[in-house]
Image 1: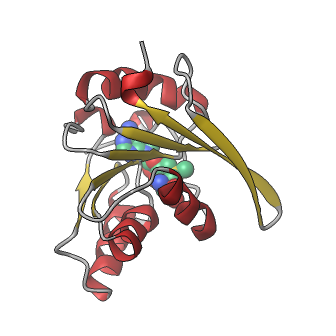
Image 2: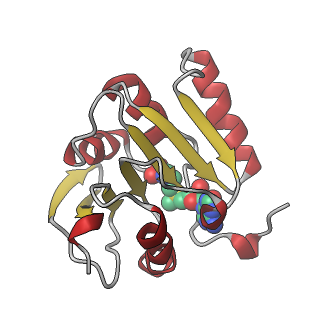
Length: 162
Ligand SMILES: C[S@@+](CC[C@H](N)C(=O)[O-])C[C@H]1O[C@@H](n2cnc3c(N)ncnc32)[C@H](O)[C@@H]1O
C-alpha cells in the first residue's frame, strides 16, 4: 500500500502532441522497450505501443490511474504489448529499457537519477518533459507550444554521463 508520502510528483498529463514529440525525439524504434516512470493515465505507454510498435511499461503509484490505463489498453487491444506496474519507480528494475520517459519535477528527477545510473544500459535514452535532470548533460532540447503554454523536451543518453 502506497501513501501520498511515496509520491514524488502530482498527476498532470502530457498533452498528446507533446507525447508524440517525446517519442520521436527519443527515436523510439519498433520492438524497443520503453518505460514511463510515473505513467499516470497511460498515454505515453499506449502511444509508444500503438504508434511506434514498441513494448511499453508504465510504473505508477496511484492504483486508480493504473486501473484506468489498463482499461484503456484492453479497449484498444494492446494488452500484449503493454504492462502497467502498480508500484514505485524506486522498486522497479529498469535494466530492460531502451528508452525512459519522465514527466515529474526537477527535484524528483534528481531523486530518480541514481536509479537511472545504476539500472540503465549505456545506450539507453531518457526523455524528460519540462524538467531537466540535475547533474546530467542533455544531448539536445527543444521547445514546442501546445495549447496555452510552451513545453520543453530534453533528451539524454545514459552513456554520455560521467
Ligand atoms: C506529471 S504525472 C505524468 C503522467 C504521464 N507520465 C504523462 O506524462 O502524461 C506524474 C505521475 O507520477 C506518479 N508518481 C509520483 N511518484 C511516483 C513514484 N514514486 N512511483 C511511481 N509513480 C509515481 C504520479 O502519481 C503521477 O501520475
